Amino acid sequence: MKRIIVIAMALIMVAMFAACNAGEPESTAETTPEPTATLTPTPEPVQLEVVPAVTPEQPVSYTTGLPYDGDYQPVMAVIENSAVARPQTGLQTADVVYEVPVEGGITRFVCVFCDNVPSEVMPVRSARPPFLYIQSEWDAVFMHFGGSGSSKADYNKSYSIYGNDLYGEIKYHVDGWSGGWDKYFYRVSSIDAPHNVVGDPLLAQALYDYDPEPLGWLFGEDAVYSGDSVTEILLPMCSGDDNYVSYVYDSENDMYLRFMNGQEFISAETGEQVIVKNIIVQYSTYKSVEGIKLWNMVGGGDADIYIGGKLIQGTWEKTSAGDATVYYDEEGKQIVLRPGNTWIHIHPEV
Image 1: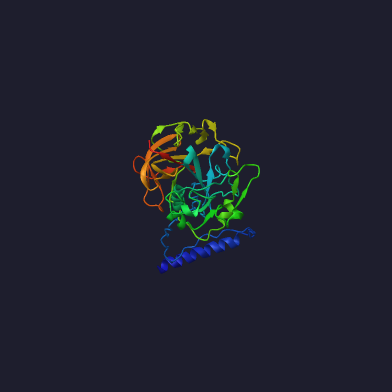
Image 2: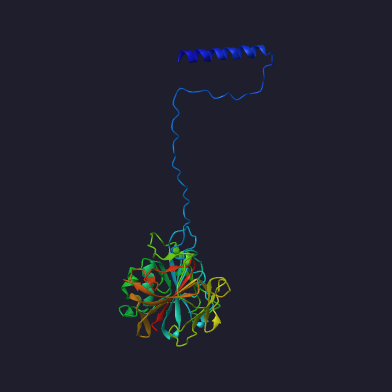
């Protein structure tokens, strides 16, 4: 070992002597020194775990499945659907619309607003007992202008909303008929009463001081549905006329166009035909008391669900008044809706 060191030192001295005798000028350029040997062992390379970056999912609405980062504070309003009431304001803006047959061979709408809560909906009308079952599962601020059984003498009768236990459980019922809620409603002088009441759901939403529980609907943009292709839907809705309510599927835009009595059904806020992304027909039974249709809203039954031009023959189930109504396909799996608005039609069994 000593010999190796001595030889190495001799070689170094010879090299230095040769360099000094070369007579070459010293270079001013910066040079990179050669690496020198080390007596310490080279450590093994450390394998670092690569953790992929996680991109947070964009929050979506509980009511439409569309991008939405606001609070879940639904507001519900009852809107008339007689001929004199059309075109109505608010139907196209609503996230969810229930169409329920009432007395007189007509229907009434129960509209749920959350993503975009308007400051005007019209015409706001009176409520019916079946609407309370809809409100109970959404736990929404409930806007209406009176209701069946509007006198105190009727409060304990089965057709009265005021005598119904569910009405007493509503935390915020904004009833323009009962007084104390005047700032949430006004009348339009150019239209005859009772078809001229305008409600302000946006103002009513400010009443919230708690967090209601969402229903748990499922949404999927790329969901694939089995079933028959159906381009036209005809719903009598208790009118006896097969063409009372109808829809035509627009495959280019993946939307359903709504008609009533064969005429385009127009939205007042857009001036265009109402379009719907998901259509659910919830079949049920009812009994009539003093002309008021008391629909069976708890339990279950058949349901026709129309999404993407397909008819899914499924079922609906609602365990109790306060539970959400869940819709299933023919295999018993919960329906996955397309992101967008949904219209639900309470319809007599066929």
